Image (cartoon, rainbow, N blue to C red; front, top):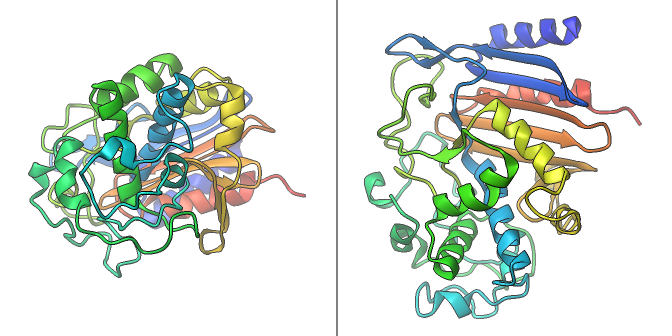
Length: 334
């Protein structure tokens, strides 16, 4: 354990890491540490209980909400998206299914195309960020993007698909998506600190997201003021690890559905991973990742060894060196 701690400290120092790291194995915390500042202007330090934005790791929560609705009989994997959208988003194909959205195989156009050649710190949203405060508000940015390929043809990571899933969940239940995440995921899991927070009124104990390794400029003008199905949740190290335990112990969805969600739908060579439904896959290990302006997140759970390692940073690139290191030293040798 001391060698792991020393290597993490060394890399954190070399990279000016700002964030938190935890390694847990079979219920025993091997490493739990924090670096840098949650608020630079006020000189407030990050702690292991600080809340951080988790960006696209939110998609795992969205997938769990959708599968809960399937278990309740409100949806099926094969349900046609158009049956809930009605006349909204006419460029979404009439044959697109829930499963294709979950698996990033729908082919629908993306409002935030990650292959668009822009930098993570660019201002890319086509409307003022304060106008994206509810899932229904996102209709403005979801509309007008033609399909890029035939539904089911191949994998293409798509943020729009997960906002559409959140929209469908809201319309089926009449409950706001943040409240659905609380009711269907956080409460049964025992996640007490996870929530969708407005970026312009972050409460105490929450890390600001910074665009650079130094300076005071935050990400508040770069992201929707309140997230939806594709990103925007805030969480803690404790809640992330509670989430993995709850998923694999069947407290959120049944074991049968966990297996279904972690069944690879696509190989993604560019990421050296596969993708299931809401989760990346490295062999038998499940992965959640998030990457946005001022946010980087990676958490990996190996059910065979009951080992989890998580790195969260409140900078755009900060998590990756430590995440790569932990992936290397904690991956079982064949």
